[in-house]
Length: 464
Image (cartoon, rainbow, N blue to C red):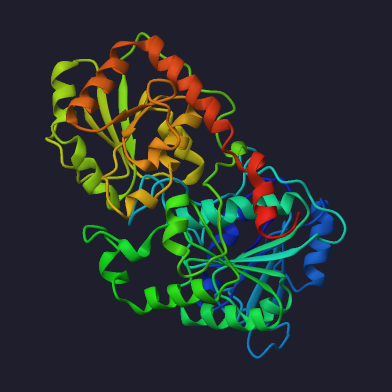
């Protein structure tokens, strides 16, 4: 699936649902869908343009253009009986797209990272990217190639890509690199490339004088055996391709300084671009502190974090025993290393538009992380997400959070079970402290938005 970032606000019509199945069918049959910029036009004008482009007249706010993807041929091939095109489906939507899954990592986390083809990537609301239509020739043509539509692609490709688009660059998101796309691209960014075709395109792009960038957000060379993806990465062809691609690329972008040190022996040109949030997608103001009702102590994440949650085993049970009016909430997982309890609640995985709402149900955020070589390279994203809601965080005292959190000022750091119990209890019992720490954390998080940081991507790509 190929997504060309849109810049118009979405007119919420039934066309979205009517077109979902067609888009999914297109992807299943080898096609790719492009959602492009359009200036605003009336429905009657859209219908007229649609007929000229061979569109189905049942959706007046979609325009289709059909092209063949084989051997560079171009045609206006007819639709299959089920309505899906036999060749490339180019959709031009009067509207925009909604960002896809964000937040937790893992096989299935607090946010749906799957099913993105049909929903998340092409929806938008007034709380999403809020892009303005660009005018004139683009400043630069940038293509992001993602290995999998999910949380990592959302933060590391979609979020900066949407912001770059707003500045006037021509930005495309795709999962399938191609020679055809290479001819139209000045900057090719490969997110965690693990396929041979990606490596081939990187080498060809280098020969053509294009800028090639490999984007890596985790230390895949030091995965822990308990990680759900360990078996699929350890000594795999994908890992070898990733390493060769990292060596071949002109530049590598990573999330942390620690990860840059892992990558540097493979490629000396490494740039650290920290994880940031799209401010328009998150609440405009911090969550008010409730001083009357029970406190919700929460965590959200995916199955890869089960070992991290084990750090809280015993602490959670003790908190529930000592405080009759608190709730411990777990978002995105049901298998946890805690004893069952009537006030141990589980929240279902949510789509991206509801992820901040899930976190806003918490009064205190937990961020336990096992101190391992792999985790020392991870970012402080969970702390930034909690902080953007305006709630205080208690996090593990490891480099992941030590470089961001000022203990006792905008968060708390715990080294052992005694620390976890002490800091969480203090926040439970002191609403004023929760408010003070949460507000200071929110102030820090507001400095970690793509709106304030997009210039770093421009500088890394040589656009400033």
